[in-house]
Image (cartoon, rainbow, N blue to C red):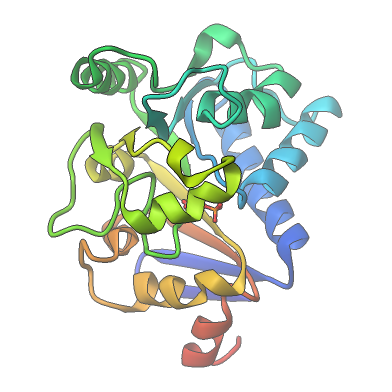
Length: 255
Ligand code: PGA
């Protein structure tokens, strides 16, 4: 199913596997069109199926990572890169170790830095120097966050240090042995960083995202739902499974 909501194209697929294949088609097309560009990656459980698809397609020679530069959305702070909960570890294990990306072209925010402000500024400079991000992949939190840009009274600008909300610490504690071990801060691209990408691909799965997906697509643009800012971007594709799309199907009539 397809919906065109303002500037946002929404593709819905029956299940997670089909959603992942559709997202991989879009990602692979963008890589084929711009094999030397910068691509933005995301962590979380939603992109895992997409990453598996890209790994398989890379092994079959259909997708080439050798020319691209990568930037990740965010990282816990502080955290050691070899901690199995760091986003560096996640990306290496779930994508980068299995494809022909050049290690020197992989950029991740440094969760071990002594100077978070300097790290954030250097990251922005690196993005700018590569000519900007061509395609940014995003997930969305059930509270509407993108990256670690949590609901707020304003839209944060560039890459910055954030304190995680209680709900995000709770949501992420499932990956740690105890809640106490979840870092309470993170480094994240800001809303301006994300909005500067040429194209945005948002992947959404599961009934617990249905409400927020409808809010971000059909509600007011508000920093209380940070993803709602994407209504102002000129080139966004949302790929959702039917569970995540159930509210928009209900509100718009299944097409
Ligand atoms: P999830 O996280 O894919 O694990 O649901 C998405 C997010 O919080 O951005």
